[in-house]
Length: 455
Image 1: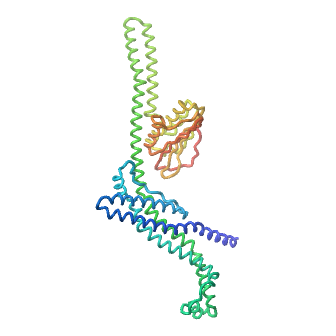
Image 2 (image 1 turned 90 degrees about the vertical axis):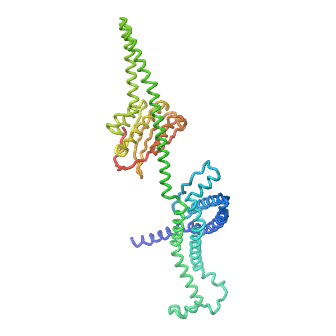
């Protein structure tokens, strides 16, 4: 059985080795001509700008050369896809939006990525592609020429006696003695074609990988870009968090003013009325006003309890996020099924859990107020990854049409989510259904495989 499998495996291995050779060859050949064009254009423009730099007018020209280098680099990254290797991510370029032409030129001159692209186009690219182009041509020409020499050697002119190296081999190599010069020459070229042909896939792919590595290092995204993007995201997140917190505090202040405060003022007035009625001996009126005051006190207490759930929900602190979310689903006016991952209590920190609870509460409130839904679903689960991510999703079978709009409740939620470096998405076609999903990054998670039931 093994004797039959081994040839098949060898055949598959050889066929796999040839897969992608055509694309790599095309890339190695085309990149040489592109690098020649890149060198010519960049050297012409940059040298002119450099020579005029003393007169200041050369600075915009040098900046233009850097901009051209960026374009040629993008072309090189696009051509790398021919090799079948992973795509090279573009760098993070400096933002020049709204800058004047002079300021934009200085920004480009201060960009390390632009200079890296320029050095690649003026020096590294042409040097590397010259080597890889020459070796590619050599391997293909020797392979094809050697394997077909038996056919086209008859069309060659007769060789001069001074360069009859096949005859010399036939005279001095014992196992070639007695062979004709034509037979020796055909054999040597054929053997050379076979050797070069067998090694051709690995040589071509090796050259493509070498050029790919150099281009990716100089024209691709750097680790510092990820750090910079993360710093920008965190700064934007902090700003969104501050804005969301300020909005929440203003909203709480407005709710206290419009709700409990007005009722307490009314309660104070009613108590003063009760005092006057009692002093005047009008007991019946005093009792009636006292009953009204009791209703106002109860309403104020109910409103304060509702507002306190937006400040510090006791269930969240006592029993954890999963229990608090389950309680939200049970108390929702719209029948809500909750699907909650048991690991969220250990995966989500207390600060994030607090934010997640408020987000879920507001989403369910929006469903009750605006969706006109008959049922809803609340999902909270932790997915794998580095870092792991928490998915919180609320869906309903309501009328749909929800969208992110300025001064809209979902916009405030989106800002709060951005403050946690997360993302909020809304899928709500007219007529429904609606699904609002929030994805938040988490850290220090040990994922369990325990299935999570519906609550």
